[in-house]
Length: 315
Length: 76
Image 1: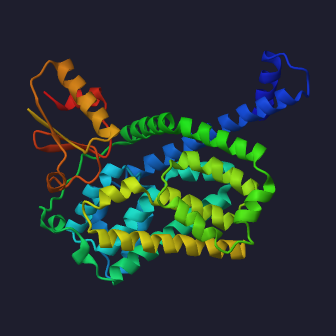
Image 2: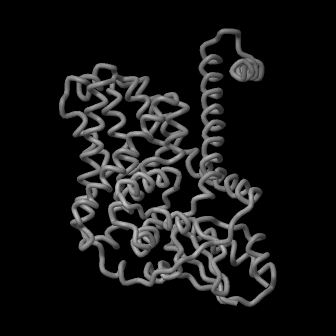
Image 3: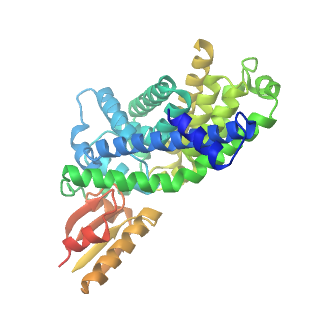
């Protein structure tokens, strides 16, 4: 219905003959973009509204369980709805550890937060459907839970910088917000995110369109298709040092899948671009010794590679 | 009045600084505005999401950017 509206508007305003290809393409493009922005706005708003109920200062009191794996699960779950401003990584890391939350549980949170964010989710949902979006959340959670649990088992607390455990522990909480304030802040946050990422989305769609138009379908399939057993490894190796906004990445991934990139490889590429990033490592290096950081990256990368291969096998 | 802004310089932290400066000048008040970017100190306040805003020792906001208007209501 909205599609028809856009079509009529485009054809009438630009005075195009009915059925013209330019008119069809243009109205499709406008309709698609409008749909994308509208739906992401709703998703981001909903997630940030829900998130206002789970500030880390409050959450940290509830992450100590008798069975550590439960902590990993809870931490990863909360990490999913938490935005990840790289500058929050350290105070968060310190705050959790000082409250007595195990290192592994804290790490589950640290992995889930950047990898599974609402912008990525929103775009995946809109461009690929809810099944793929859910798949992304599910596997992201599994990787976060498992990696954190493993690191917990490896007893690597000695690889955290000493000052973290020496800092004063404080229990603090900002005043509670009422429903109107929550809505107002969710709105402001949504506006801010859209302002920040709209250009990435456009560029991503642009690059995607170029890939769609100019990259022959054979190249992607031949180089990175099911026939190449190293494709997933290569994808993760490329993705780890790269960092891109999730917003810009999803449309490009969509175009590559359209050109024959297997879904598992695409998922692996996306997770390693979005979930592990050089700026984040630089920041984390300030609170963990390099060895711990390397172990962290290695475990998460291994998890992503595994997910990639499994999905190629079964999808 | 002592206002502390906790953060390590990302755009959100700077936006908060702007809002605080605006609120203070709107009210025509004298305030000492301190930027805290040392992790140990930030952690000692128990604030875990940036940016953080502390006014006269009380945590007013963490992990979000209150508007100049909202900040204005907190300063006297």
